[in-house]
Amino acid sequence: MDEKIGAEARRLVAAGVSVATAEELEDRRYSLTDLLDDLAGCDDVGERVFIVTELARRTANRVLVTRGAWLDGGKWLARHVDAADPGFSKRLSAAVREALSGRDEDLVRMVDAVLDRCGGRLWAGYRRGGVS
Image 1 (cartoon, one colour):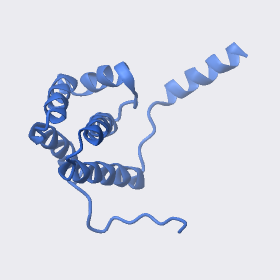
Image 2 (tube, one colour):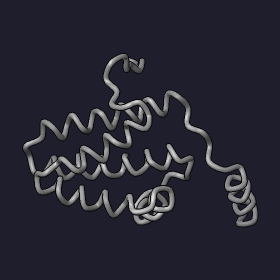
Image 3 (tube, one colour):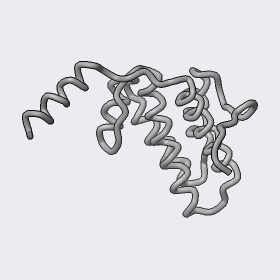
């Protein structure tokens, strides 16, 4: 069994990162835009923690998607995003600390800079069909 799993893992690594679809990219743009809107209207310290940390995670992963790198989480997200964009996690970490203290400007600027690389904030025309 371990040999089979190892072979599958080697196959997946050899295949490389799959290219995100246009729909996936649009969904990511919208989710960051929506979180920025949530942050702008947030005056609750508890909510702010979750909005800010989710913005940081999704922004870092967006950098990885933009660079064609593997997505990750935890400490590996910081390491991989720095490999793709040196110093990004340090700058993002500083912006997160500021945002958790109520000073959002640096975090918003960083998120907007990442969004600008893929068309900017997405509101107009975004619609994803679903079951109602």
